[in-house]
Amino acid sequence: MQTRFSKQQLANPRIQLADDILRKCVHCGFCTATCPTYVINGDELDSPRGRIYQIKDMFEQGKGASAEITKHLDRCLSCLSCMTTCPSGVHYMHLVDEARAHVQETYKRPFIDRALRFVLAKTLPYPQRFAMSLRAAKIARPFAGIFALLPALKPMATMLKLAPKKLHPASSELSTGRHGVKGEKKGRVSILTGCANAVLEPSINAATLRILNRADIEVVLPPEMGCCGSLEHHLGMEDGALEKVRANVDAWTKEIEGNGLDAIIINASGCGTTVKDYGHMLRHDETYAQKAAKISAITKDITQYLAELDLSYTAPENLRVTYHSACSMQHGQKIKTLPKQLLSQAGFTVSDVPEGHLCCGSAGVYNIMQSEMAETLKQRKLANIKTTNPQVIAAGNIGCITQLADEAGVPVIHTIELLDWAHGGPKPAGL
Ligand code: SF4
Ligand code: SF4
Image (tube, rainbow, N blue to C red; front, side, top):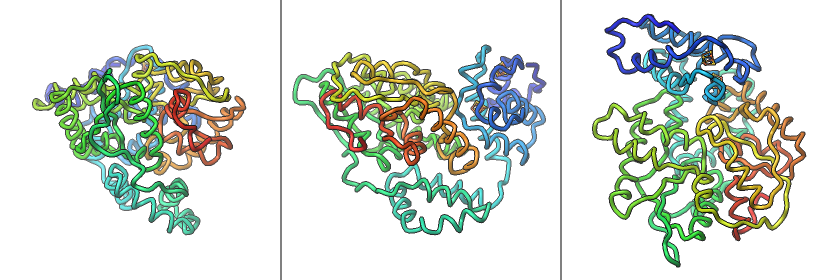
């Protein structure tokens, strides 16, 4: 694709990066066929190619974002299915990240939209505030129907609907510090305990810790470690996101320079995609660029790390497991077969979801902000899953688990909980 940026524009690192990415696009449109929003809406402006043109136009004109481009960028799930399909290697993720930051800096959203984004950014990344908001949601749930009647307050109704009915006590979260092993230590890692996992399903972190400790891997959870920053990053709120990124880089670098770290383990693939991108996110920060690149280089999804350990598994029951591959797992991190291989190796009968490349509609806070599209994609995903007649659905991302659980008709369990069970751990509570 030809671009027309001036020398002056190209001096801006954002424009320079966008130019490099845009020039790779050959307009072929292959990406449109696998883009969920294009598949549903059939509108070129809601396709990757259409969005790329709009971003190019916005940056070339050097103007602030319009309401129109903001609408089409907001509808993008950041599922990155387009990146898997693109034959030219267009890095849509970095392009849309820059475009979102530009929207955030230059476009004034309607008040309710701004307020909602502010509340989400100030609540969800902080486990204590998140847990408190879930308790409040429990009380407010009966009013969800009233909120749903007012279009501007629809996201509030969706939030109340999505909030889990059962809340976990704070004591079920993992304690920070060192979780040592009894035998000879074979490795030392940190687990990103995250914000959603810790609050919504603490059993995921517990299973991750158990299986690693059983394999004689010492785990350290630095108290300074927090949210990976992806929520604010996807909302275009770069300052807040980078503050969290730097805090995590500092926390893990201290461990690397202290007793060493072999890997940073991620058990929420949405976070994994972001932490693996820390090196890029901080590339212009002289103090952090090198440290962030190192963090990204040693970050692994839990299934990648387990595959290296080559453990033995025996599933106590031969369940029919349908594996739902989160977009951030298959498109973001390109981890496609490993989780299924491990589940099969463990003794489960594993099936794929037809149309598995299409997003379930979760996508961070997308299911709150764009509830209609999210609901359409969810129902399509559930219908596809149903054709596989599962006894249990496995997924490696809490967002997808929360999105699908209430209407799946069978338990939706994190892959690591099934593997932990097959490795001698307790039966997952959801089964
Ligand atoms: S990230 Fe997903 S929703 Fe966004 S343009 Fe690409 S395929 Fe479409
Ligand atoms: S598939 Fe790649 S090269 Fe083709 S239009 Fe989409 S982004 Fe551009």
